Length: 443
Ligand code: FRU
Image (tube, rainbow, N blue to C red; front, side, top):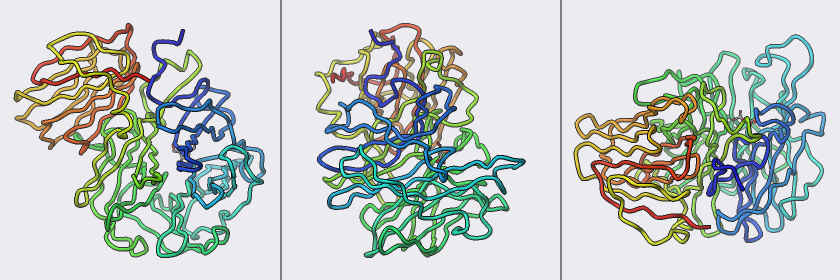
């Protein structure tokens, strides 16, 4: 019997720790998913590797395998995050080889190597020898040792790579490199915003129609009542024109919940832009009690990303619809299937859905504030309240798994993701101010 907190719809490790999604690609008729994994330690210590899974449909996955280990001098302290490009007969993977030198160092200005390393795989699992492409000396002189997380794509007939970086004077930025052959890279330009954090991790760039988007995970933003509430953030800048000219628009957060960081997108063979986030966060002050059971963290659901003007909307991939049992009307209270989707329409100025008697999702038309509020300390394992402002909150789509909830507001204009740890299953609910349906998700 699986533990009741074992997720049914979300990718999570059998044992050990998971963080960022890596190397997302569609190759050989399969979704190739890699992720940051500490197989030896559910608290995230020990060897940092890449784990691998494949799926045809985003919901049924092959067994996990560890495919990249820190076994090279240039990646001996960790096979850090990176990305994939699909070539006619192979996937080329790019990642950061992290090296911490012995000695007295702060590991910001000295003592750390950040190497961009490439490997090739013909089947997704078997890796070629590793090849180091860029080293600290290849980055601009004002960069600290924190440079990482290559994301590579092709545009204007050339290969481009973004890297997240921290300057020596503590400004987060993205470095852009160009290449003709995926092997030799030259520095092209950088993008930044004044006073916008000290480090930008996990950059990603993509276009939807004519509009470019630069996604980053900035560290060091000031918390505000209705945004930037987590220890670190993730969001995107609309980019006007070429990335090389660096015109970044207004930053918008990908997700307002407790547990979201380091997302990555890729294009599926049928042309969709799909995003996975890590449904977790580094250095948070809340916990995940599965750690005591031997595993920690999961990924978000895969989400289709669409643009309306320069605003992005996220929805669970359409494949999920095919897994839904016939809808049943929700009432004012009841119990939920172990994995389910609630599709609700708000019918009153105040909306409230309470899950497991201690997690309240609430909205008030008067203030325009939507919130996730834990009234039960144990249920949230230290999580308290996250809120946003400005949504109409007419429609809500809520995906509940055994120990997580993802709330998609108004067609996915805003999303809230959070872990929660119900004492008992099935999970009870109590609802006011909305009508709608609940569908069990059957795999
Ligand atoms: C983001 C991150 C990346 C890094 C990886 C290491 O969560 O810090 O910047 O490559 O995790 O696991």
